[in-house]
Amino acid sequence: MKASFGKRGTGPVAPLSRWSATAVGLVSVAAALAAGHLVAALTDPFASPFLAVGDTAVDLTPHAVKDFAIRAFGEHDKAALLAGMAAVVAGAAVVAGLLSRRGPLPGTLVAVALGLVGVAAVLARPTSDAFAALAPSAGLVVGVAVFRWLHRLAPRHRNGPPAGKAAHEQTTVDGPATGRAVAGADRRRFLVASGAVALGAGAAAVGGRLGGGRADVEATRRSLRAVPDVGAPPIPPGADFAADGTPAFITPNADFYRVDTALSVPVVRVRDWRLRVHGMVDRELVLTYDDLLDRELVERTISLCCVSNEVGGPYISTADFIGVRLHDVLADAGIRPGADQLATRSVDGWTCGTPVEAVLRPDSGALLAIGMNGEPLPVEHGFPVRMVVPGLYGFASATKWLVDAELTTFAAFDAYWVQRGWARHAPVKTMSRVDRPRAFQQVPAGRFVAAGVAWAQRRGVDRVEVRLDGGPWRAATLSREVGVDTWRMWRAELDLPAGSHTLEVRATDRTGHTQTADRAEPVPDGATGWHTIVFTARP
Image (cartoon, rainbow, N blue to C red; front, side, top):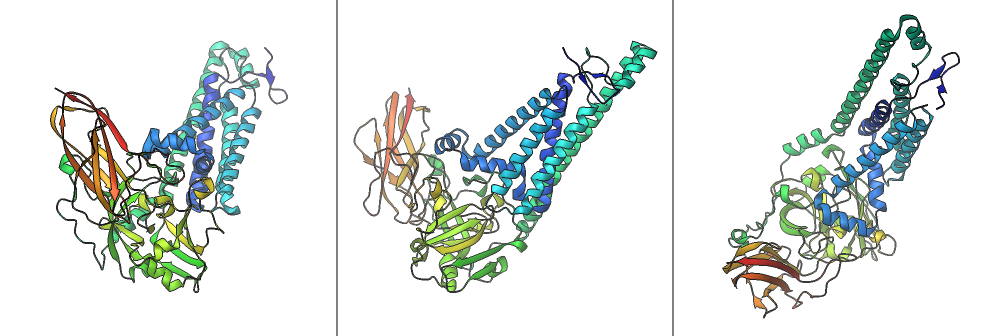
């Protein structure tokens, strides 16, 4: 085995031990990521290199992989992605360290490459400017500097020659015992230095989290009130069959589904929030939060549904939203002839395209929402302001963390998901779901109550039917209707002999359309098919 050499006169330098090389790689990468995250918190939260790489990965991920992630992890898909990225980065750090046992150059090159990937990812984000490169550049510099510094301090392989001239002379003059003491001192010095860097990285990461303003925004949010001038009608008795297994009619904020592309929830201060309304308008508007509060606030009970919902999927929820009529805001701006798309943008650059006609109908119910179920919007659901347009899937109607609204045409602009193959127009389809029994559940034989939900926003649910084991369709009992923009619950009493059973459900809306049995995937404009449950009745 050849020995590497240090500076002139120092003699052969032993390789790093495997554990110290691994530690050098892991600690230096942690320091780089923490530094980038901290600088991003102080300058531009969307410039965090780790999150920017994750956002780029989300943008480039094929539909099939995204659909698998949603099916496999549900609303935890982002956490799964971040965990996977962390594992990949940690693996790269370990490889960088092990490749650098005889010299720091390989690890330095890996650190530079990772840093440049972070810079490129940040600059590729739609909200970034040249200044945004400061955070990933800081991470790059810190990562390389820490790597090379720890590499110099790291203890060498115990079976190799002593590390450097001083240690060699100490061993020769004073004997092996003193040489071991020197090696022990080197090891302690390395452990102290590595521990200090790791603690500093942790502190920087926490500082980046706090510096992002989440605590400040939460405090401001709690101080606000969301009180409508025009309240929604009260939910009537019998609006749900929760005792029979359906959801409660109003979904608590903590349980309201969340599907979006944001790896890190955007944090927007009320005092900083602005909404620009521009494009094909007579008068450009720039609205503040106080401007919205000065308008009439209305409350509407609305069900929102995600287009990625599979047949029988969970991504539908209902809330009382409080906000300003979007129709009135656009009327104040004055929409020019020919504008058929309202293109809206989130603070993180995500875009949405909504048909103008869906907003301008007098009864559209479209809102610039600031409240949800009697309180200001939760940060995860778009605080301080989001858009809500009943009857359209969320990707075409429900921009969260809203900061920009442009009147344009569908010919001139393709929104985020349209660019990725989804439909431009996305009305919610008539659908139904079985909530009780669950798939493969065992239930008592005999009299049994099945229950679930149905929805047909803008049209209303007229009828729900169930079929047991391929027999005749029979009408289910419907709950009290709250409105055409909300879901409706159903229940049906069944006589179950012991054994395996198949239960199907279908809904018919007020236009007379019955949902089709033909199965279709969510792409490009929503899934179709009858929800079918297989379960067992035990004697």
